[in-house]
Image (cartoon, rainbow, N blue to C red):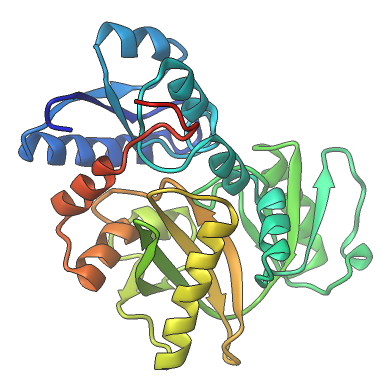
Length: 308
């Protein structure tokens, strides 16, 4: 890979643009320190032209959210014959869409929180739900907890729906489950550890994810040994259920009964100073940030079976 020109794709057009810029800059600097011919690319609608003009031969995708984490950029790179990091088109699209991801998880026998999917314009009241308050309301296709609310009373239900519908045409209303927030790192098709997040806020929201001091990270997650091993097995099963490639981060709620409620698979997890996958890789597998980046770039390829 050091003989090829690497484009680090960052920024983009989603609500997570600023986070992606941080991830991308960290990856770009790591690649330069490792001796790679790497260029930072702030992704816009002219991406195909920029990739061509820059002579990019390999893409390290550090995008988050729509148009980057959902298969759109992956499809473009496949068409252009440029090998890239992370999951392919289908796995990226499935993971980004929480509704279809839940269906894939259920087919694989993995436990997820009970939910109702709502289209914009649907009329529903808390009494119509098959479960009681509190509930979690979230847009189907956003990351970093953008547009997510915990609703404890009927008065705030409509406001939470309005907030979620700002970001998507489809919204999930999920039964609230109280448990430890545990996240499993997957690298090269194997789990590398599980970390527990203890947010200062009510849940691991955008502020807690990207503000230093707003969440405590506990590694390894405070689980009994058999539960710790099991949650990693469930994480790998979720990664495989969507057909993910390379690396991912899988988020769970673990109850006091050791039920593992699968929340989502992040196919392009954050690579910032506060991000969880680099911390899991360092503490669970002894990998520095630069070593993690190098392992990820080493797995860059096309996913359609074509020769690169």
